[in-house]
Structures are given as C-alpha cells and as structure tokens.
Image (cartoon, rainbow, N blue to C red; front, top):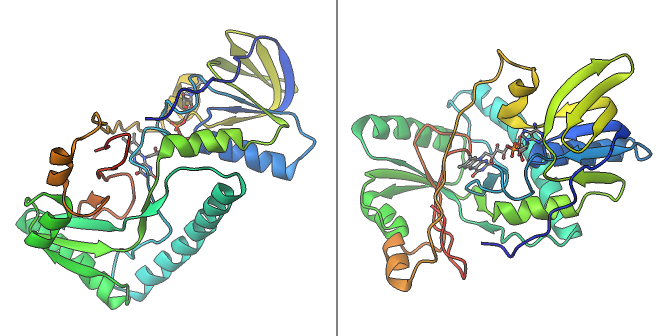
Length: 288
Ligand SMILES: Cc1cc2nc3c(=O)[nH]c(=O)nc-3n(C[C@H](O)[C@H](O)[C@H](O)COP(=O)(O)OP(=O)(O)OC[C@H]3O[C@@H](n4cnc5c(N)ncnc54)[C@H](O)[C@@H]3O)c2cc1C
C-alpha cells in the first residue's frame, strides 16, 4: 500500500560495537532507541534479516489502545487494570509524541472497538464483560444485532459492546517512520540475517553473511526466531496469526462493510489487541 522504499545497506564488513540488536521490529527499534538515550556515546547497530516494513510489525492489523479493561468486576481486578493502563498510557504518550516530533504520517484515527458475540456461550461471556464495564464506570454502549450490522455490515453477531478505546493506524508506515527516526548514532543494516551467536571472553560474536560482529551486549529482538539462535528454546511458543489485504475496494464492496468509516471487532473475552479486523478505507484499499 505504501510507495517503494530503498532499504539500508546490508552489513558488508566485520565490526566491533557496544550493542548489537537482532531484529528491527517494534521491539528491536525500541531497544536501540532506549540504549542510545541511556548511553549516547555507545556504538549501536541493528541487524535486520529482511527489510523494514515486511515483518509482523508492519503487517499487523494496526490496532492500538491505551486502556485496559479489568478482567473481573472486583476491586483487585480494577486495581490491576489501573496499573496496566498507567503503564500502557506511558507507552502510548511516547508513541503519540514520537509521531508528532518526527512527523510520522501513519493515519492514526480513533475507531473504538466492538466486542461481539455470535453464540449463546459468547453472549454469556460478553454479558460479564459488560458488567465489568458498568461496575467500573467505563463509558460503553451495548449494541444489538441490527446496530452491529449497521456499523460493520455483518448480521452475524447477536450482541456487542462498544468501547471508545482503540486507535487504528497504518503499521507499515509507523515502523518505517520509527526506523527513519533512529538517531544517527544507531546504524541499521537490512537484509542482514544473524546466522549464529557465540559467547566470547569479552562479549559476543555474531555471524552474518556479510561479516562478523563482536559486541559487548546483544539484544535478541527477533521474536519467534530467537530459539533458532539457541536461546529460550523451551520458553517460546510460536503462534502464527494471519491478516488479509484485499485489492482496492470499489464503492459497492465498501457499501457492504457498514456505515462506520473503520472498525475493530473482537471476541467477547479478548482483552488484548492481537485479534481484530476492520476495513481501512482510502485510496489504497482495505485490510481485513
Ligand atoms: C496478522 C497479525 C495481526 C496483528 N495485529 C496486531 C494489532 O492490531 N495490534 C497489535 O498491537 N499487535 C498486533 N499484532 C502483533 C504485533 O504485530 C507483534 O506483537 C509485533 O510486531 C512484535 O514485534 P517484534 O519487534 O517483537 O517482532 P517482529 O515484528 O516479528 O520483528 C522481529 C524481526 O526480527 C527479524 N529477524 C528474525 N530473525 C532474525 C535474525 N536471525 N537476524 C536478524 N533479524 C531477524 C525479522 O525479520 C523481524 O523483522 C499482530 C500480528 C499479526 C501477525
């Protein structure tokens, strides 16, 4: 959906650095940025196997939120959600500040979220979530089948809970922008997969196709590929999730996706953001 981008050069020589970050998704770029803030004189590199904008950090559904809905209607549940919300708000404020400071145009818009139930069991589960929202004084609206159908175009769901808590953004534009916003003292190498890492007397040695990197510290930010480098073998469970991107939709197709300009819909009990979908309208088409 975005215009072509010229990747940064691959590593083509041996290097000695203070910090080597493996993986340039959200995690790797955040680590590199924070290391640079904490240690401005340090030599920091990020090694990315592919190119920016091709991995999960670019090809996700693009939903983000600064609010955590309590899991139970108890005081303890409310307190836990309050603490999690405070933490996530810190990150969210950082994100919005970075978008502004670096002029990152990623089409961020508030769309809210619909938790929706299609079955009797789903409805029972959703009613307890609605109770939690009520007990905690969280602004919400309960949607009947017809209202969900109007917003999303789907008459499949019998009950919904709308919360005005979620933003939708173009994740590939965000990760590109975050890579471009790295300080000049952080060097990013794309198309530079790390094949092996070995402990040495003074730190670490990283083997890549284009050269060997000696680093004082290494950050593994390559998500589910960490076990391939010999670490967290028994502590990582890889889950594959998928998104579909359609070609640009015409007016007739868009008309079937409800009246809301964009929306997210997720299962009743899902309190995290990794499940969701919604049409993104605009010149470039729609994601589902
Ligand atoms: C379909 C889908 C929808 C999603 N929807 C949402 C959503 O709406 N909201 C949300 O918040 N999250 C969502 N997520 C989750 C989100 O995308 C991930 O949590 C996030 O991208 C993880 O970032 P990361 O930097 O940890 O890992 P990644 O983005 O996977 O980055 C890891 C990087 O490491 C690189 N790498 C791997 N091995 C090596 C190696 N040996 N050497 C060098 N580099 C290496 C990879 O190429 C990759 O670029 C979704 C995920 C998917 C798949």
